[in-house]
Image (cartoon, rainbow, N blue to C red; front, side, top):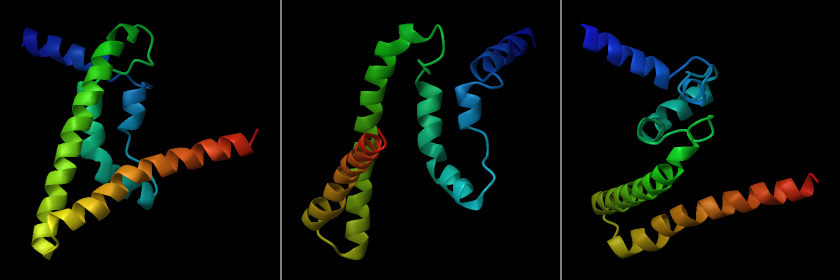
Length: 126
C-alpha cells in the first residue's frame, strides 16, 4: 500500500502534465494523425520509456546514457528491419539479395533524402 503509493508518485513525476512526454503520448484529433500515432506507438513507446528527455531542465546529466541507449535502439530496430524484410521476401518468393538491394537500401536512403529536403527548405526560407 505505502509502496504502491510511492510507485504511483514516481510515475506522476515521470509524466507530468504539460511535459514533453505527456504531449507526445496525447491522442491526436485528425484521422491521419491518429493512424500515424497508432503505427508509431510501439516505436515511440520503447524510446520514451527507456530514454530520458534531456531537453528538460536537470536531465542533462543523462546525455551519455541517452546517446548509448539510442545507438542500442538503432541496432535493435535495424536487426528487426532486416529480419522482417527477410520474412516478407520469403513469403513473397523474393530472394534475400533482391530484398536487401532494393527495400533495405531504400529504407536507409529515405532518411538522408528527407533530411536533405528539410535543410534545403531551411536555406530557401532565409
